[in-house]
Length: 118
Image 1 (cartoon, helix red, strand yellow):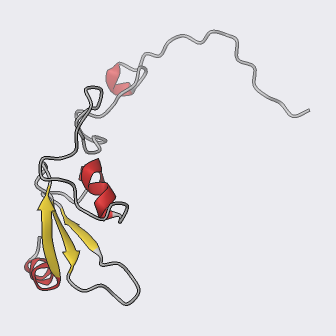
Image 2 (tube, rainbow, N blue to C red):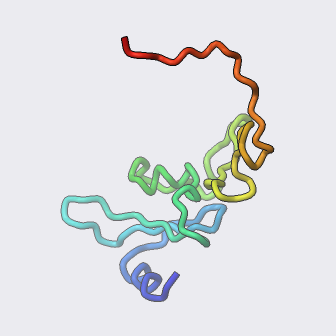
Image 3 (cartoon, helix red, strand yellow):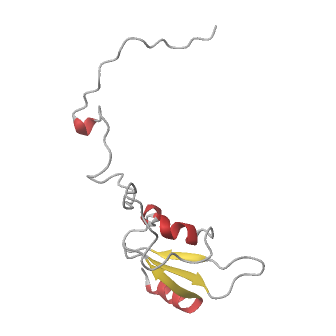
């Protein structure tokens, strides 16, 4: 992050908290007339919106008034940990038939009939 942005955040916003990915969250000290104070995220590394966990997403978009608890919300056994968008990485989803998985698709069943106007 450049020095000007960091200085601007220090002068105009209050630090609210950080998440498990190292992203830092801020809120404006003074709101604009008739509007809620702006909320910001300073990403740890590349700025990618999918790096914001669900816990912080609600606060960042004014769905929640209070930031999430420091220890996070209770997670159920069936919930997975948050992952940022993996497109373009070696962990990206490659369905059957994808070129990088051999490019072999299952054979067609022959029951497809294209629609024709008529």
